[in-house]
Length: 158
Image (cartoon, rainbow, N blue to C red; front, side):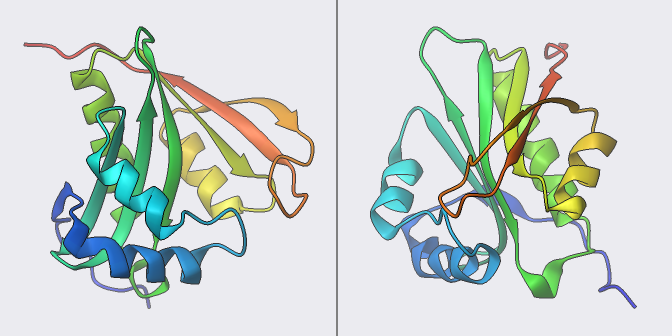
């Protein structure tokens, strides 16, 4: 039976989340992990958004989005949900929050890469309207291929 669904408490990451983010990264990914120094930089960067779900200092899930100056496109760099929280809708909620943040920054599209051997993530992105693009051979440091995905973002309506 999947875990109970609770409303996600999504908020910007702080340095108090750093140890838990490192542990989440270690538990979720076998390679291409974000280092402590990189997390620290991303949390404080004007060109990145790091959102987490869960209690302060103990996030269950995290998303990282990068922005480039003079670009209307955002790049979803990482989305990780702890094993104990999978199936609760946190991935979907964080993806929606990342898209909202991108729209608020004036972005009109979001792009991402996903391992070709990650069917759960692929299904999430396709359900959320991302279109599959090119296959990138040996994209990840362990040699795995990636699919590129992109989605137009509707403008923020007031």
